[in-house]
Length: 297
Image (cartoon, rainbow, N blue to C red; front, side, top):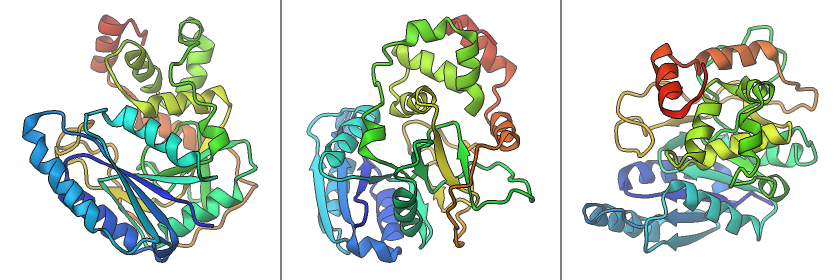
């Protein structure tokens, strides 16, 4: 039983090709079903690139099966991911989710499949990712995996019961936003989280990922990561929709190494402190968030 892979793409055929070739380097790819979700063009100028993406998708070989969903309209990444993951999890008991700007190690799919099986019944683990943010892990940290209070949108996986708990409308946001203690707890994974959620609810953002992080918080659960990232991004070159050229907050090098899974792993406050430092907002950004969105520093 190998987890199906849901791959989301838009208008970057070269990035997509590198991502697929990277996945095919994993021996497990030959036994995995690949679902490719291609969003429709947002503008007329995007039509040739979207067409090139779809021509390439039709040519993909090497997986157990390849199925694709070509949308005529532009849903945007947030709606596309929510729809696609929901569809796949109607037919499978786990999923691996990728976007078209990620490169993986040869042992990435092995790690994801083993972790999705190993932690399936562990309610503390809401999702699993093969990526790790560029934070320093203490040399005396005893495990090969760690738990972070933040959902991850890079090369991640989950199960139907966890996905079903996400409230994509964030129905309790008004009550939550008036509770400073709750906001502090949510921001345990980074002080950028609450401002992003408020922008999402204000219609400034269209992010499935911040709502997914909020679902982790609401369920007092975590994302599990390896201590050495098995993924790196190729999307910080200005080609993506969420990050411009020169964004380095996500830069890591992928490292192939054995990863021992253990149920003894617990959230580490020292590592969370380093995570918060990594996602610390500048005072200029805090002032902008306060003036425009009423988010208190």
